[in-house]
Amino acid sequence: MRPLMAASGHAFVAPTYTGLGERAHLASPAIDLETHVGDLLGVLHYENLRDVVLLAHSYGGMVATGVADRAPARIAQLIYLDAFVPEDGQSLFGMLPPDRPHASTPGEEWLTAPLPAEAFGKVSQQVYDFMGRKGISQPTACFSQSVKLSGGIDRIGRKTYIYCNDPEPTTFTPFYEKLKSRSGWTVGTLPCTHFVQMDMPNELTALLQAAA
Image (spheres, rainbow, N blue to C red):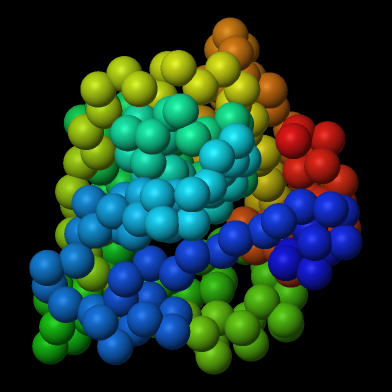
């Protein structure tokens, strides 16, 4: 998405959470949701970013919600892309459907293993190969820790939810259904799997441009 967004004239910043991606060597049992909220707050502060469109995908919705609540003056708009939208006191595990399993990594119970590609429907070979190369376990406390909100997020007037509805229903259907009739929210859909960045990058770029 980075080159597509840059070509559209946007300065696109994609921070990496502690313990993931190129920062995987920093993984430890101490990392939790609060750690990742702090990661993004640090980027906003040290890069002096303002008038930000904060885009959150999947678990990133937990992080973005915490960030927006603490730094609403820096956030112009929130866009949740097939993401969790927690209320105060909710954790990601607490919002999962009862039939959605999660497993710790054998021998390292402080880690939660990534879901297999098949859990997200009939994904493309590109997605399947990407998950095989890049998918890693994540500290479980990121999913079990509840988000704490103090009302700052309510000061952000522009909020958008983009729902990926193939196959339907998904883990994210309840968020779409709840938010499509909520005042202050704009919603959109894309007919693809959760991996929209690879399934429909051009259509996603167009939706983001329209939202921003």
